[in-house]
Length: 303
Image (cartoon, rainbow, N blue to C red; front, side):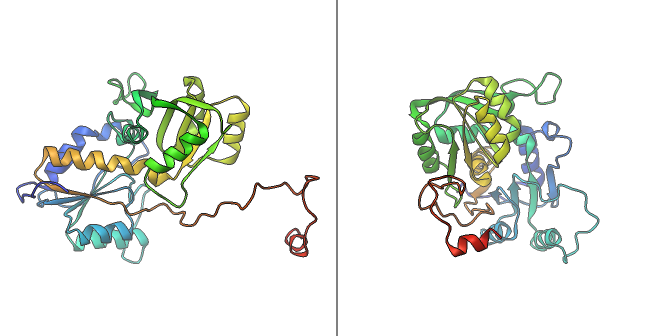
């Protein structure tokens, strides 16, 4: 929560404060950031910070009597020809407008910011001596001052990969997905790269950086397999939402300090994966000589 709100703060004031911290020019060309819904002159007493703009987080913001939602993921990323209430996103837009709730998005411009999304993720792990995993290139609007994608840092105490995986699962926001790792469980980890959100496009950067492990989200089978076969660092795969949720605390604190508005942070888990069951025992490949004879059900399933 924050200090008591004041009607003298407007949507335009909040937008200006966030645009200063996360300039829209830093966003990727395909991205859509900034004010999406709302009257710039409307008063703001309370801001709700969320990762995803979905019916559940909008309902949460309305329950909190928020006047503005700050979201990380864009609601309207691709072109649309209609926001009719008969469409999923149209219903959200209508709900916001009917209740005088503005919507602001900071996405890839918050990813490269310093501090930004990956700084908050690195802080959850206690990493120190941070530097960008992929620095913003010269000539880019975000170049300089430690900005760029991801962060590299050092753990306070070396851990094995198994220990680091368990530690990450404890300090990151809880999800059904949890945290899984790829690599030798006993591998000693001192340096870690992190990237909030989907980060498999930066596997080669993590390898070039010479880190012991890389934590991100949305890792896929073949890129991970080839990465490990090539001698790359160990990998930790967390839920997408969990790697970006820590940033909301930073946004909320910044707005509380800069403006006389109350802030609330949504802990509503919007990760789409909602059920997880660990295998009862290590899997045995059907072709292995150790595999037990197939049951009738097994034979049916292979037809």
